[in-house]
Image (tube, rainbow over all chains, first blue to last red; front, side, top):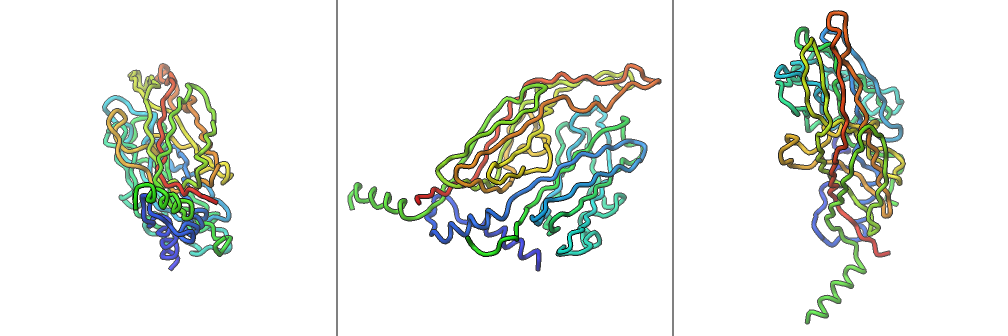
Length: 190
Length: 175
């Protein structure tokens, strides 16, 4: 239900007809009203990774007063490092966990509810990432996610390399969480 | 109706009704080597600009020289990180600087690039887009060790050309 609500807002923003169509003033106001309250947002952080099978962790919190809907996750290869024909590392395991301490969380304790984004770092081959030694193959983007996470969500990422798959001591992996933020503070059209 | 009447009617229509039109808002800039800076760009005063997506391409002029386990290699890279901010929104569109590779248009760096990255944002009429960039040396992660005292890395940062095209719609307002 929450999902369909978010989607309906999103559709209002993207489903408009295009290219010089004459709009009624009401329709225009409607579009701008929803546009004002729906915006794209990126959350980026980088995490170290090494070949000692150590687990590294980073935490960030999303914006207050804006509900965050996660729509895609991208990883950056270690953009600064690559050695000869080796490729830098072959695989890492990443897990994302979402925690919401905000009292009006739509999903409460959501870590268990979000099976697509693994809550454990040892999981889900879908999030293993094989660089294959290909230069500039820095994007892996699981798309078509639609997770209504709420506001002030704490996102905890944990990562580790599989043993013997890293040909260097240490690097950083960038993680980009892209989504839509919806402001529900002010109901009613202006 | 003759042409003059048609023109007048079209003019009246535009005066009395709001409409939308597609709009490409482009900007190129040089990210100076070793600098972090920001600049502001006024967006059109014609009306609100509803950005739907953007394309970014970049050069890859900076150089990294690495010695790892006594093997030295050199590669070029682009170390630019950017952040967008709307003055009216008073909030950045990302929580941190994002490496330009991660949000640029897909494609090899020296090949044609295709597609656009969906990213919706409404800029009110008269709004100003602030672009912040950082083209300073990245963090060094490789260091000499007792076994490999020559290990390390050197960066030679160069100016990079960043080209951005924001795609969206303008709603010219007549009132």
